[in-house]
Amino acid sequence: MIRSHILLNEHFDNWQSEIEGRWSYRRLYDDEHWRKGWISFDAITWSAEEKALYCGLNAMEGDLLYRFHADEERFESLNARQWADKFDSKVHRCLLHNPNDGCFYFGTSLLHDIDQQHEAPGGKLMRFDPRSGEYTRLAIPFPHLYIQSIAADFERGRIYCFTYPAEFVICYDMKSGTCRNLAYITNATSLVQPHNGVVDAGGYLWGTCAETRAFDEVAGETPVRLFRYHPDTDRFDWFDFGLSRKADKRQLIPDPVQERDIPFHSDQTRHKEDLGFCDAMVYDGDRYIYAGTTAGVLCRIDTRALKVDKVAHVIPAGRLPALALDAGGTLYGAGGIKGDTQLFKWRPGEDKMELLDRIEDDRGNRPARIHDMAIGSDGVIFLAENDNHKRSSYLWSVKGF
Image (tube, rainbow, N blue to C red; front, side, top):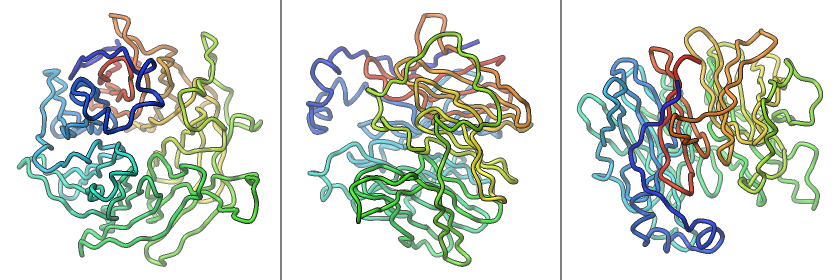
C-alpha cells in the first residue's frame, strides 16, 4: 500500500512560465505563496524508541524540523524557528541519530545566492535532544558557507561536514567543540561532493572528490573519484577510481526489468553527463558501502579490496539519492525524476532485485523526486519527496513491498 502524508498542500502554476531560469532567490523569498508553501522533505530518520520519523525540511521560513507520529499519522513541528535565521533554508543531508546520547545531529544548508553571502553567517551544526526538546548550536564550521551533508563517527567523537557552495570537508571535534578544515575536494567546474558520505568501522570517512587538472582543458577519464580519510593518521587516500557508470559492461546482476520505457530526464538535473557523481552512500557495518549515482546506477565499494563493482543500472530516469539497509541486510533504494520515481529492494548475493515500477497513491499523486528514505520498525518504508514545482512536497510510505 502506497500512501502520501501531507504537511502542506499548496499548489503552484508559474514555475516554468515565470520562475525557472529567471527569478532571483530574493524574488522567490519575497513571494509569500512560494515562501510559505513550497516545502520539501529532504532528510528523514526513523526513531525506533519513539516509533516516530524525524523529518528535516527545505522550508524558506525556517520551520526545518518535524516529528511524524506514524501511529497517529500526525506531524509535529519541533520549533526550529526559535534558532533559525532567514538564511537557514533546509536540512539537506543528513539527520543522524547518536545512540550514545540519544540526540539528533544535522546541519543547515542554503538557497540564497552569492550576493547575500556576507549577510549570511554560515551553516549551523545543530544538536536536538528529543527528550527535552532543546536545541544546541554546536558550531558554524565555515563562516558564510553552508552544510550540504554530515557524516558522523560518534564512537570517536567526530562529525564531518561537507560545505556548499564552495566544497570543503570540515571535522568537528565533539570533545573540544572545535572545527578544522581538512581539505578542499572540488575543481572549478563541478559539484562533486557525495550527497552523503559515510564512516566505516575502521574510522575512515569515505566520499567523492574531483580531479583538478589545471594544466588541461579536457577532463580526464575519471573526473570524479573516491577518497577516504582517517583522523588517527590525519591522512587522505586519494584514489584514481570512482563510481560505476551506465556504460560499464561488467556488473554483478542484470538490470531490473522495466515495465515501461522511461527516458533519462537530463533537463531536470545539473549532472547531465554520467561521470559517476555520488547521489547516496549507505554502509553495511562490515565490508561494503553501497552507492547510488545521479545516473541511477547502484555500485558497491569494497572497503577491504579497495575497488568498486557495478551492481546494476536501476533508475533509468536518473537520480538514486535514497538508500537504506534493513536489520536483515536487505538493501532498499529509491530515486527518479519528473514523477518517474521508483523503489527497489535487493538482497546482496542474490542474482536479481525487485522493482516497484511506479510510486503512486490512490488519488493518482506521484512524488516528483525522492531525496531520502528510512525504514520503520514494522517494515514500513518512508520516502522523502523534494523539489516538486507544482505543489508542496509530501512524505510517502510504502507497506508490503
